[in-house]
Amino acid sequence: MNWENIDLSSGYERSRNVLDAINSDEILLCLEHNVRELTEKTIQAEFDEMLSRAVSSARDVFRANRANYLKSALSSRSENEVSA
Image 1 (cartoon, one colour):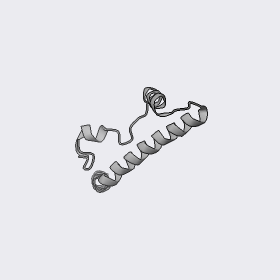
Image 2 (cartoon, helix red, strand yellow):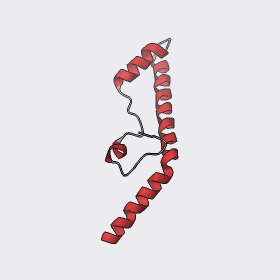
Image 3 (tube, rainbow, N blue to C red):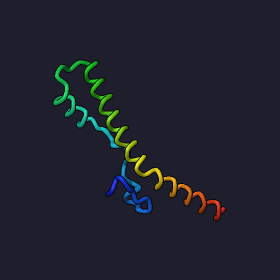
Image 4 (tube, rainbow, N blue to C red):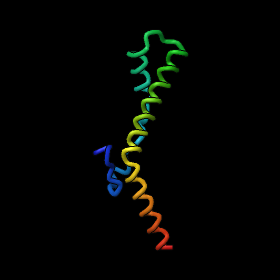
């Protein structure tokens, strides 16, 4: 799959998550290996950084595909207006 040019006519590509899920296993793995001193404050900071990276990545994917999303949404709206 090309994240720089998502094929929105493909059901498979449309179903892929743009924002990666962060599960508890990933959080624990990250904390165990990346945080020297484990406290509520340090693990909150690491989690916030994980979220920031995930959101930043999703924004990059969206920006790369903004024209695709617009074209698909306009086409769908046009089809719905014709059938109404």
